[in-house]
Length: 202
Image (cartoon, rainbow, N blue to C red):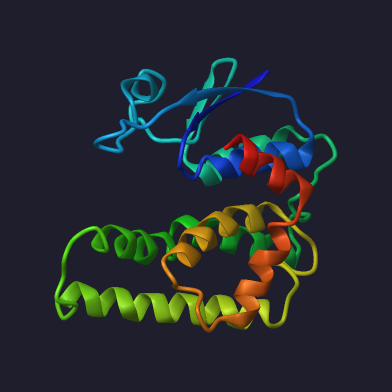
């Protein structure tokens, strides 16, 4: 059985959501952040050298990195759900957004989060760079969701799970203000039963 090493207040919630969408059996092992430093515990490092969640184990396979974990889990689904057929336009849109979530989008969003933990004048070079990247990324997201129901087209896929977790963090930072299609999309996917269950678990 697949084992999910879940860290509280982390993006590993997305793996729980994916597994709940698929109805795939799994064992969850919880790890708790240090209440003072907010860092991951040594118990995670004992599983994978990066000590980052999500981590999944399946027999001799141990994997870190959300997009890789997603591809592995979707490969185990005999019904081929939540991922478009290969060699279709939707498949490559799925890939783009799956990687965009932890690539182009994660850097400015997480920088914004961490920069907010310290007192800043707001006029340093990094502030301007992050503001530019945020405007670019969220403008792109908004334009796509104005035309599609979901990121890979008109069907919900794993890319939506990948993106939603980053959009939740963004919303908590006020980065979705003014992006009406993006906010409506987020409200919609958060009503999915599997999301609600994963959120309660994670």
